[in-house]
Image 1 (tube, one colour):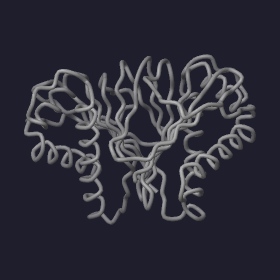
Image 2: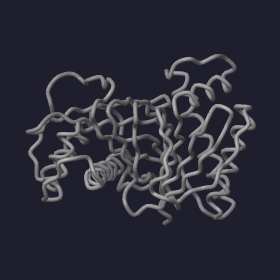
Image 3: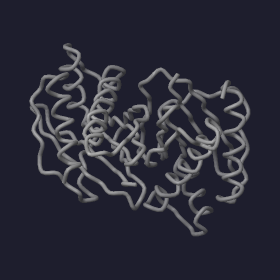
Image 4: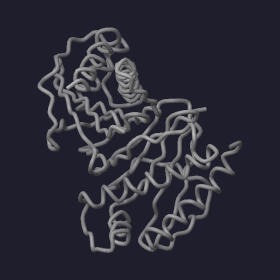
Length: 155
Length: 152
């Protein structure tokens, strides 16, 4: 993988594929330049680590109302609050995207391993990674609001 | 359990060699509910023979105290310094765990450390994963070292 643009394009493709195929929700890339993520408010983040020849983190950030709508669609049942189902669904989306990212970065995903997905949520929080990283932030528009896909890869 | 011992040893070693404050492990808990109210959380993903996530959970004042001790200066806000310090501690504890597991013939790789700062943040793993939570006490208060994992 040689450029962030190529990686972004493939990530967009993967995200849309997962949402169309698994979540059954139409999404599109929100237009505009790459946004900066300020503190996240009333949101839930699913993240999964990448280790091996590429080290990094993939995170998905959903405001509560988007997270519950996505979970409701994904599981085919009405979910109204941030509960275990939402945490599992958001973690699973991070996990699926992480799996795709692995294949994008390395032929058939060998030499890269994923950590366990986890979720973080709260009224207000901000996330930062330590290492010197290349960062990609992609905003996606859903019928209920925007969510973000973030990738940080160690240089 | 071996894993708990390795985690405790790795944490003690990091604090003894880098931070120079006395900490003592409390009884580990594998309950789902044991948690330490945290404002700053250092996270790092683990992959390989053990897939998981290691988290250092600190209340704000403990995070600032640890950061101050590590950097040898007074720290009065939860900013970049605290973020870097707690992330680095997560990284080093994970490194210690990696070494301890290597001795047992289990190979793991580390992702990169991430820190989360916020009010009343909660973290959780995927259902089905095991969880070990070790509370530590130090003069500044308590903090937690948590490992969520699946052995493969």
